[in-house]
Length: 426
Image (cartoon, rainbow, N blue to C red; front, top):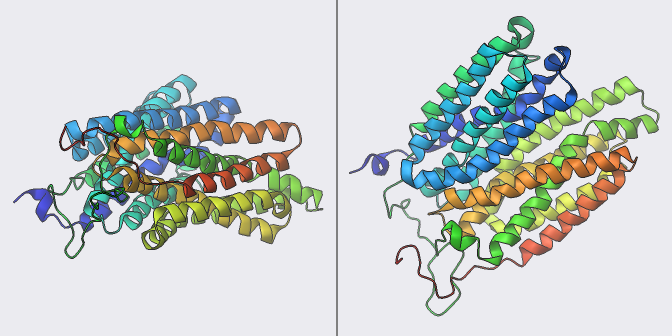
């Protein structure tokens, strides 16, 4: 009897959360930027390191999906953890305030490590929990969201690592911690034996002569990319992610402007906007990953994405009217964060539901590229229109796109392989 078959699947949950907590380091970059600016960096340089990390995260994730069947999820996760840890460790030891050093070690190498490991707990979790795909994916990616808050506070207000030890030591400490966490979590990243299923659970069955039910046919990446369903999911994720990522970039700047126009002093407006982003958005972003995962297990992935994107669209349209009032801003930040977090629980699972769980590690890498495109489109749209003094138009545009996304996903139907052999019979 194999190790995978006898392993307690709850260990997969623990391993997944350990891995994702460490990978959430990428969203903690903002805690380092003030010290780097003080060291002579431009603001643009600080964002270039962050952008490099996001870009290599997304691109390497596609490669990681192709590598997983060859090297196995455990080895892939461990390789990702060691790469991430080494990037931060070398960045801290070699030249912790040199732009090119951190661009290479933390942006390129660190981002690549995250890309190698990110999809592993999602793919493994779905195979061990086919009965609760939404919940297990939500729990895994919630670690990514909450991890950012943990690393920000440890380096900043709570732990004061930067203030007491400096940037270099903080980077090195984080590199060691990240490597250890991902390696330990990676030990439990193994697939169950072929044909394994939870006691009492029966998979959906395809009915002869009818369109196959969602998830009953496994598509390899090449087959998936030839279906309209892939592009429907991609566009929906792109529009939804663009709205959330634009909001992150403007969550402090625009409300400060709106509140000052309503007579609130600049210092008070800054504190209120910071609280909205740092507490309400951040906590509900993490909670939305679990919440939407649970909801989707009950009402289905397609319906969940329809509701999430429609509500996000309405919130984007209302945000300009809510941003200038503190109580309404807190409510808006919470709802926008909750829906933004839902993307990371719902799109991996709708990918598995539509194209099968067997190749989700490879397939979700392609879908996740939508997030990378959204990371360019959304923030640039908000910044350009903000420079023109028209933040409201930026929110209106992404709001309409989210409503369009809800309509696109509503038309999603199970894909059919037209005259092509299935992976099993190829």
